[in-house]
Length: 120
Image 1 (cartoon, helix red, strand yellow):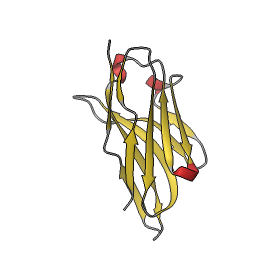
Image 2 (tube, one colour):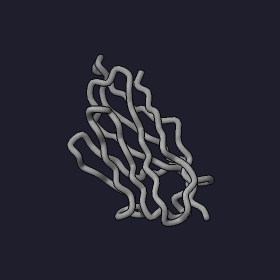
Image 3 (cartoon, rainbow, N blue to C red):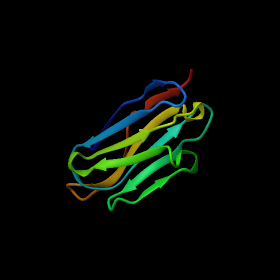
Image 4 (cartoon, helix red, strand yellow):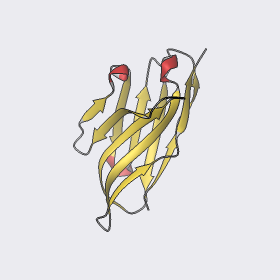
């Protein structure tokens, strides 16, 4: 079973930076897409950024120019560098990874979530 372990959340002042990490493990044959979602209180979960196996990236408009998603394929790890953070970025951030296992079964796994709070 594919498992995801997230790290890097915390409390930061407006204008500050944080870097989230998410490492995937457990019978992975191939990863197709790695992404970050977030959910603020009272709001729906939304896609923040994703990166495909080929390196293509996609960002929600509100984070373009401030957040950067990257991956280390050798480590099955995805990162989210968040700069110039704003209070409206406050949310629980979830890692999502989709691909195929060593038995060629598809998987769609989620991390446990990490809290990001932007406040002075």
